[in-house]
Image (tube, rainbow, N blue to C red; front, side, top):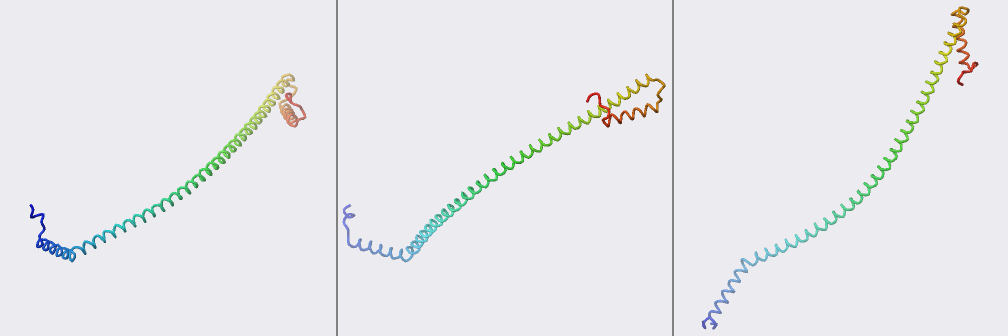
Length: 171
């Protein structure tokens, strides 16, 4: 055990010489490719880091643009919704006005129709009253008045009632 602890000059010489030769051989064959590989790896990592930073910056720019577009679109959508609401309210008012006008027109037409029917009923009633009066006078007078004179009398009486010379019983 003691021999391992005591250094000998020959062993140290050969160990140092082999180490120097090994370092020289490694320097000529392995160190340059190893160092260039490490440097290439380091450059690739730097380039990847730069690309990632650039991509992150571009993504942030795109995100900001998208947010601006969304805000703009949101504003446009709000404007279109409010415009559509106003147009719908105007259209609703137009429809209500149109329906009201149509209802008023229908009411006026119904009143006119009722008036014309009342007038027709009044005319028919007058005609029937005239016929009854003529029949009654014919019965009362008998054969004194013939049928031709009776027709002329009824025509004259109808014309006078129509012209307003003879007042109607109702009004």
